[in-house]
Amino acid sequence: MKKIATLILLALCTQVQLAAQCNPDTEPPMVAAAQGLTITWLPNCFIILFATDFLDTLSDNCTPGDQIEFAIRKTETGTGFPTNPDGSPQLYVQYEACDQGANYVEVWARDQAGNTSVDTALLYVWDYGGFCDCFSGKIRACASTVNNEPVEEVSYELCLNLPVLPVSCFFRTGNCELFSGIYFGTHPVITPTKNNDPLNGVSTFDLVLINKHILGTQPFDNPYQLIAADANNSGSVSTFDIVELRKLILGNYTTLPNNTSWRFLPKGYTFPNPANPFSQAIPDSIGINDFFAWETQVDFTGIKIGDISGNAIPDSLISLDDRSESLLQLEDHFLQPGQTTRIPLHFSEITKLLGLQFALGFDPLALEISGLDLSERLTRSQPLTTGFTAGRFFAQPQPGLLTFSWDDANTTTLSAGEPILFLEIKARQALQLSQAFHLKSERLHPELYTADGTIHSMALDFLAAPKIEQTRVFPAAPNPVSGPVSIPVALVEPGNLMLEIFDLNGRQLHRQEVFLGTGLHRIEIPVEVLAGNRGVLPYRVVVGDLIELGKLICP
Image 1: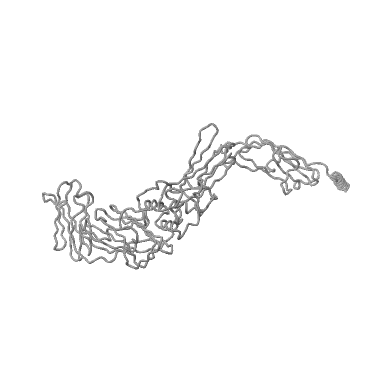
Image 2: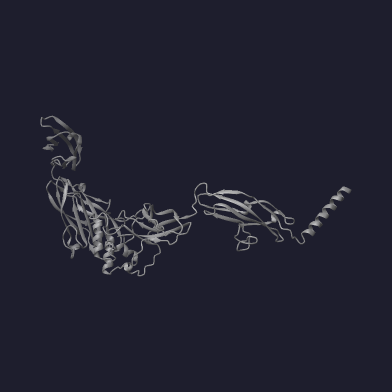
């Protein structure tokens, strides 16, 4: 019992002594910082360290350890207990690329009575991975359309003006591209260019819009359309730009001779005169004076030259919208070798027409287009000629291809079946037009444009073929042989066909039999049959009671 009383007495004495010592509390906490902490940079060249990372020991004579406040700051950056603007303790410090080597931090402690103490810690920061450059930063260059769609395959040039040294230029290609190692204090100039796929977004509909702007019936409503319409880069919009774009559309040009496919200007650029963006030189680059930033971004607006309607595809991941289809009709004639005929082309329904374009492909060994006339409804004051003109009408017949473009600022209403144009066709072989003609869309999409501003896709529609009145076997072509050879055959009813080829000694070189239905067919002669043979090779075709003899000339 006496021992227990003694312990209680000692505890009471300790509490009395502690109360006397802490009232008031004038003793600061005891804080000891860990020394020699070493860190290395990660690729982002940025790190945050907390006060707890440096605490070695922390105690106080009155305040419990879990109630002692602590804080941290870099040495020589302030005085007193480190706090944030809101008065809370500053709990961390951050380091960037240029803070390499030995660094010192102050680790502070504060008890409930407000007594503070501080210890200084030594910190080593190293760049063992070689990630961080203390003397340079990064510039990211990005490009998008007026509608903020990213533009692909932009070529960026960044040039540095260095004192004494020659100008140094660097290149990147993409949408948003990063240039690193740009020395502080230099004057980088970033210039984007893009000159591929000049037909992207360009069609005869854009010529309709330019024509309406020139006539004042539908003026452009923003400076970007004016820049896009200036195809010849003259600083104005005129019929000469229509001429240049039509040459591009129909294949006379593969690129615009006086302009690039895209033009770029700094995003957010304010035009001094939006109604005439050409009144002053349009900037095509962004320069930065006395560059000093770890990383910054410059943005450009891309304008597709010739694309007034704004339907260019800036990104390969973006697809064209589905469009309604209109039928371009023509009669499916059967032509004999040497026969010439004039065939009208027309639409299947009433059409309020502003323009159209197409590329009609065919086999130049089978036929040629010897003439083309625009219908009277579409000519108006336009000359009835083929080849290039400076007006609304352009037709360019060439071997294997007819390119066509027509537009008008005023609407032309055509009834169903009313001719648009007439083709004069001369057959070099026996052929059915439905097997000879096709629309090509590789570079010129077949389209028509109606008064309501709708763009329609086009498809060929061959009307019922005239009836074949007698079975015929036509001469082989090409002959003399200059490539794959075929023999056209027209059958009034289904039947068997036999083809035989001989040499001049009467030895049979080839024989084939096939069952054919009613209509026009081509009997292809295998290439290996003719390979190695020279001179004249007689052949015989037997269809029912008809026997046709011929000769192949193999040079």
